[in-house]
Length: 397
Ligand code: SAH
Image 1 (cartoon, rainbow, N blue to C red):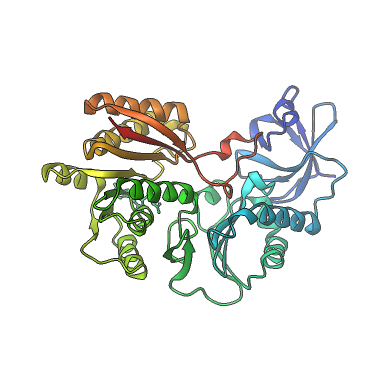
Image 2 (image 1 turned 135 degrees about the horizontal axis):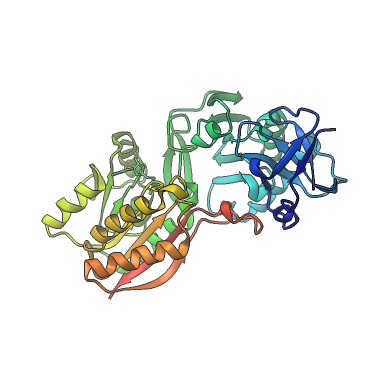
């Protein structure tokens, strides 16, 4: 039996059903478990705590599957978790054909991500446990969705920390087309699942795209939008489809903006109204300020500035700077939607940073709403680390 025995007192977090066992909590691993092996985690007296997957090369030495001793961890168990996860997303079916079907720890499958883009599935195996069960998980996903085409994008940084080499390619069915077309809330987007960021699209911003569309409609004809860190233009397209007169999308990636322009065409938008600027956001903000431009809606959705807790101070300065400059581009009465996807930056800290930026920008904003990912990115209550995306909807007063 592969027993992972914890040091005395180190069982506390597992008793609270937190799913991770850190290397520093382990007294010994009996039976020489290999990467991905199912292990029985026990306290220092030998009492059962959880079944989990062993990761010898990770600081997170065990990721727990279940806290029930009588639950056999096998292919049928994996299939049941996948089916449960897919069923939990049913409420989104009427709105979109692009959904995160499985989201790691939140769905009891630590390290497994599965996204659906119309008929195309894209998966990531980001930990040794789910890597071991890859065939069973993909079979279960195909069975639960009826989709035949599955592409792997296990090229995220998280995999490296697990001691796993990157893996990408077709797992089932055909090579994905250069652009898979999805429709979300009536807007068409092209998704490059092979080369795009993450699995191709920022599914986690669905609710905020909808909010931007509502605000654009509220602002009425003539509404203008500045979309900083636009990627393939999600917020710009949502606003334009809702009647905004002009959107400026800024991103340093020419490829992302080329897709944004194709997306504009897909939705029948004219090029003149849908402006794309390949630029660093800081430079574009400076240029727009110099031009005296102000917008009804400004969106700031930067990449993860703090990859870990060690980067929080530096990231806080970067968030403050981008927000300070962004605030100066908001019309009086206009809206700012500002985001952080750094897990290491808490909602409270982010709010403080943004408040500090407003003071330095000498502008008054009110907080209308806190923004977050949708129901396909749930957070397990015992695993707060799963919540990473936070946003604030502010209005300039
Ligand atoms: N808002 C997007 C997702 C943004 S992801 C959406 O909803 O789809 C972050 C984006 O910022 C990426 O597209 C990346 O190319 C871009 N980026 C990163 N650093 C940048 C910088 N300094 N200036 C401009 N764009 C940047």
